[in-house]
Image (tube, rainbow, N blue to C red; front, side, top):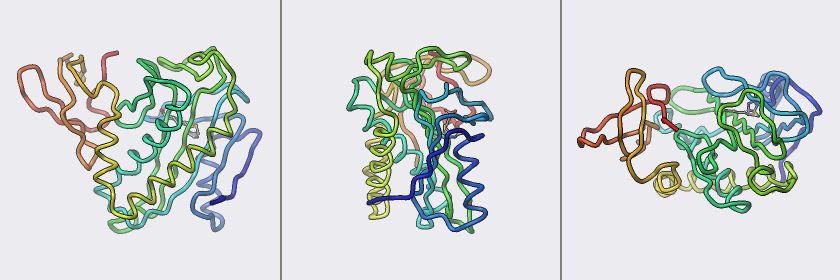
Length: 243
Ligand code: BTN
């Protein structure tokens, strides 16, 4: 299947560009906006996204998943992270998904995902998915814990080849969930998690504690189990991994 692709030299943010376009005209599901550079690349928690011009993959796409209920919107994060992981697996080993949707190589972040959903009634009527993959950049100024594909493989790579693969894989998983296979996707997501097995240090905003990942709920809530066998549940901003 082919989708419209808008190639830009520079924009503030591919996600902003796409949302602006959607507000002005009809934009086909799956339309891609990609750019060589962003002047105000946005990350999660109001952070910025660093990317040297022409070095990395920066793109956004849109879904209109009206069949997804608001309480199960985390499935979108799951399909996008699984798609990115699956595509990066072709280049290297040790790619995992750091809950909720960072993509890691070993203990470092190679890709960030920003998902912005709009709700209509109790459904998701629009999901703007922004993906930034560190490809050929080798020096980072202010990203915490970054790594690029070039640093891992010691070779340059073509960002737009990877973009097409990730996009096609997102749509493969999107069709899966439309056909009712969300359970299978969630199991695959859990099996792909960073630190899926074993005890590690976490911080709840007050103190560090040792725990292991027990589950990720349909709502995206992370369930940890402490060494003492106590279950603790966290939403996205409530817990931090100690790396
Ligand atoms: C994160 O904080 O990990 C999410 C980073 C998401 C960055 C991508 S780059 C393409 C798209 N446009 C943006 O402004 N942000 C996303």
